[in-house]
Amino acid sequence: MRRSIVLIYIITCVIPMFSQVSVEAIIDSTQILVGNQTDMHVTANIRKGQKVSFKSWKPQEFIAPGLEVVKVPTVDTLDTGDGFLRITQHLRLTSFEDSLYYIPAQKVKVDGREYTSNNLALKVLTVQVDTLRPERYYGAADVQDNPFLWTEWESIVWLSVVAMAIYLMCVLAWLRLRSGKPIHLKVRIIKRIPPHQRALNTIDEIKEKAAAVDEKTYYTRLTDALRRYIEERFGFSAMEMTSAEIISRLNEENDREKITELAMLFETADLVKFAKHTVGISENDRNLVSAVEFINSTKLENQPVEEKVMPQVTEQEKQTMRMRLSLKWAIGIMIIVATALVAYVGWLMYDMRM
Image (cartoon, rainbow, N blue to C red; front, side, top):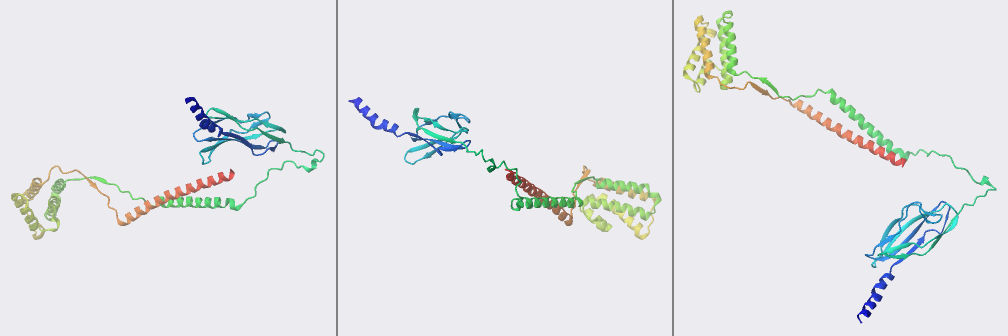
């Protein structure tokens, strides 16, 4: 009983499944001229999930004696929408001898089982030539030049002109940029002499030339050196202040004993410059020593000996720098655009040759 059930199942399910697989072959044309080509199609109708294997062909391989395959066959798949697939192998055939060719049935394997298609035939015809009247036939024509068509070359010509114009503008802009004097912004590092050292150097020069100048010039130089030192050291405008104002300001932030000696020096200097007062050599030397002692007692140690000088840029120079930067950017963009146009023109010319 069990064997009967299995047999019935095979008959009702499995055998119909195999019977639904079909293979057919068709050919586009049953007649061709010698050397012409035609396509043959081998189609397998299968269920989804089944595997199909066609015979592989190589170019110039004979499918039948005298009838050869032109190129490697292609395969495509079509879903019919009802659970079946149509898988087709396309072969291109040709022959160089006139004859009637018998194309044998093609074998296709579906899930390992072999199916065969129907047989086909192909008639290859030769060209009938009337050898009695050869004047009716013409020889091969000479190679002819294609006529010049402006519509084909218009875009290439105009794009080339635009590209050359852009390159010319780049050259002119570069010459304009080169003709202008660039603005160099460099930070200068200069040697910096501390205020006390500068004042002491000046006093040494005054001391060396004391004998060659009058007292008014002597005290004028000496007080000017002190005023410049005080202005740089204490940060107020000593060059524009009177002697009394300077002493009053220094009393707020320095040693009173040294200020007293400095006040006596300024007082003597004012008498010499404005009242034509005369002093002796010893007093001049004493005032000179007082000036040196005041500088040494108020100087700041470990002052930097180098100073960075930042460049000063005017508004006109800033505008010039912006213009030069914009010109450089414009040149770069124009070069990129022109190069892209040249590449595009080259591609158009290559496409025309193809």
